[in-house]
Length: 409
Image 1 (tube, rainbow, N blue to C red):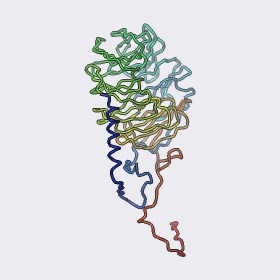
Image 2 (image 1 turned 120 degrees about the horizontal axis):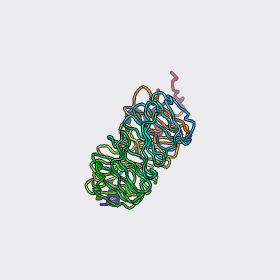
Image 3 (image 1 turned 90 degrees about the vertical axis):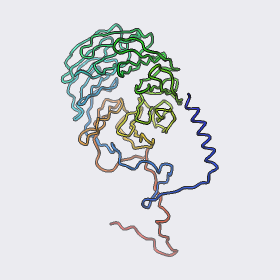
Image 4 (image 1 turned 135 degrees about the vertical axis):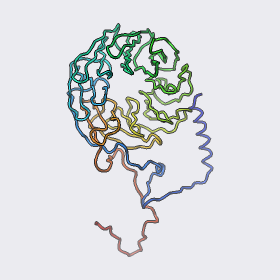
């Protein structure tokens, strides 16, 4: 079912119905001022769980990042354009160790090691000091971001081969020729491997054996697959899909004005994603009906990040924007020192002491942001909604009477 067309038709019907209703506005006044923009008077008024933010520490890495970093509980591992892999402490921003080794994909962390892809080799380094643990040579160059999960390490090769390895030592367990370009990170759930192939296929294999379970072809190249009770995946055909986990059949799809970017995020009710028409959208997980959408100021470069009950979105810009997941209302923004070079990282639990959000800029600065002191800040690019006085709280001034003054203390 193409939910987009169904919902559009319903929206037109509702619009026609509302035109014949009498205009009435009921304003509940709490205090002496109301927002001028009454369309957003239902916006959440609770304190933001993450804003305001202040800089806790800032580290100059000496070179810009070349791929997305990997995180664990205490450190971030950043591949830099000058061929360095740097391990930086999350609490202080101190560089714990660095090694000179080129990487052609984002690293992954697992089994007390950080693993990189270097041409056709997989190399594991010890987390504590960067010492080399093992190296595994593959049959072709690694072309897709690595996956490490529950002891499994999976690599996609430029010749269309998918390889499953033992995560502890890199020993190959099986490999399969998929027959298509592998560019996007696969996903692992339960005992299944879900592979987005650039020719449009979504392929599902048994993780233990590599046996093909099913395949389904979309109208464009699939993005990273989010696996739950169903598969949620965007595509370069401008559609976002919910696919059956049993056989890949389309349960619903929603059309956007641009390619879907990155992986989606979900909560109990909705699925959230961004697209190159510069919108973030929320769809009902079960029906695919759009719950809300909001425009973005810049072009997104990755999917949204969930922070408490907020969605954090960044792109080709200096700012990070937050949206209320339930309503889509603007929940604030943080303006960084320069254009971002990676997806912002929210520290699990949002600690009250130490950094809560980690930013990596395109010019090679790593910044830890802690909870700020004082009211939330804003700038002219995002002004607060103007306030207007409510008539019943104004005292009329008789002609000739002196204008009352406001006491200063």
